Image (cartoon, rainbow, N blue to C red; front, top):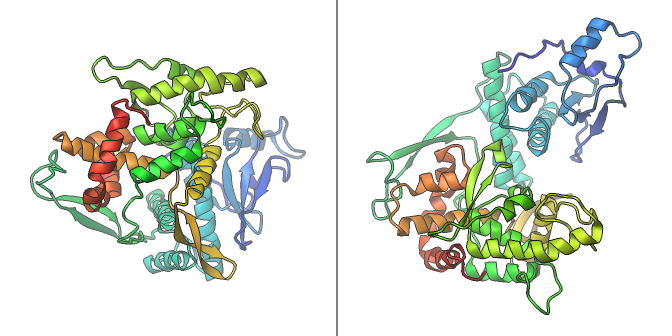
Length: 455
């Protein structure tokens, strides 16, 4: 843990910064007003009037990075347990960016938790396991998805684990349980482990659901219809629609790359793809990844060909039409609505995929939070991240078919998971329960993509 300044709750260094000049309020719209999220700005070049040299030196030494989110209460006082946790978790961790979406998510999750405790009359450092369970159940009752609640509780439980280690709290709110992972000799699923049973530890507080434990993998028909709604194949005649989003979809589907990993690719990376002489796939080293853990993915011949066609046609037109100097591989069209010729964002890719899924008629009934409580609405059946799930399930089945001795380890490395347990816990149930329904169709389809056949 990093050495941090010892700040008193009243009159902390952060609260001494000039209000309105280097912080900005960011209040999530959830009806609670006990706390606010603030954004750290650049320090002024000179100290405030009346500030001593010693104070100014201390502030500069311990200044938060620009864009760093933290929480203050109604008295304009920094909520120091949250600040110290976020600082240690993000600024003090080389694997997590000091500012960005991950830091913002951590901050919002703890903001929501502290706001809930304020309404419930709870002290953060004396809560019990039952208090966390009540919070979890209320979130689920209000219509939050199980995935959302799980992610929020993971942050909260990690916060208390950190607080106990830091000596700020003696709360032990988490309860761990050990789950057996059976060895399936018929498929040699865990041949790389010792004979017998494998065990995985997880929190008992995290919500579980038999149906939603399965990840959502697209069927072959769904892949085809969503692809058609995203755009034509590169170089297709008679269809003026852009092919960029279709290419990104197939890139994620064929490699398991996350959306932000796809949009972070550069022109140089794509032009430097060299097919393997034996298999035809092109290894690609990606460094802009979740947790900043670099890994190598394999680009199938057809996906590589589509990318190169996109570079020579659609991308070239966007660059010429705007004079853009971007090095990004995937760019906005010259006639786009915003940032013409500039790098496409993950949000744009996800939004267009969402629209394509709805346009294809692929919907399900989902529970969402409405003004009067939970509401049942028709929502998109898939998200962009489900392409990664589809890759994982299909590739595991292909590894098993090939008789690979360590399929889970191979899949872990391809997906970029830090821990093998993450891969197993995420996909074990799906590769078991969905084997009969999707092995032949989806694996054959994906095998065609990996072998360079048309997409």
